[in-house]
Amino acid sequence: MARSNSVGKVYLVGAGPGDPGLLTVKAKTLLECADVVLHDALVSPPILDFINPQAIRVHAGKRRGRHSLLQEETTQLLIEYAQTHAVVVRLKGGDPFVFGRGGEEMEDLIEAGIPVEVVPGITSGIAAPAYAGIPLTHRDYSSSVTFVTGHESVGKYRPQVNWEAIARGSETIVVYMGVRNFPHIVDRLLAAGKSPDTPVALIRWGTRPDREELIATLASIADRMAETGFEAPAVAVIGETVNLHQYLAAARPSTIALKTESPPPH
Image (cartoon, rainbow, N blue to C red; front, side):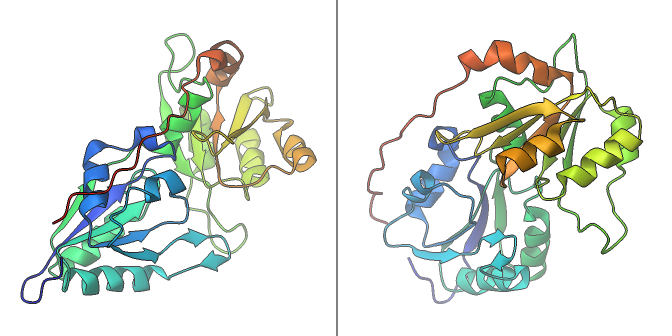
């Protein structure tokens, strides 16, 4: 539904971790009535199937070494589309405000005078461990969780993440976007006094049928990654609750298929 005189609204929508059953009702409704959808690379195909067939689709995904659009270009497109269309959806994997640059995009849209609203999604740092049978907290093992990005360029600038403080202060550590730098991260945690026997889980495509899991320890995980050729995208879980995987994985959730229906006309 194009608009000529009034400004539309941008919705920063979390697509969740891949399983369409974990998409919120609000997110699905917005996809079905959207005029424009700018989506990330990690949004799963079953969720993209919910998009209004008449909507304009723009691939705005960012993968290492393959940026479809620069961040500034994405924001400018959101502004331009909101000036001509009523419902513009910025569809992001996981949650827009958890390592998703949603805060940056919202700031820029507000500064440009564009109405904007965030629609939270289930983040992979919670969902992937759950599907692997790894609770992030447990009364016997962990009362604290730290979510941290592992996407730092080693040697190019001063690291912003204080791995030493995290190693000393967190019982469970969840690392996003850390596969490429994981051997470096492991070295930092070990140097800070984290036990080499600390269990580690790497979980790729955590809520999809083709998920991959690699369980090891801080001392062995780098070698196991090299042996198996484990690749991104994945989240890492570091801490004693990883040991519960062997008992709880049998009760993991199943990925369900949702029927895609044509949206009502608007």
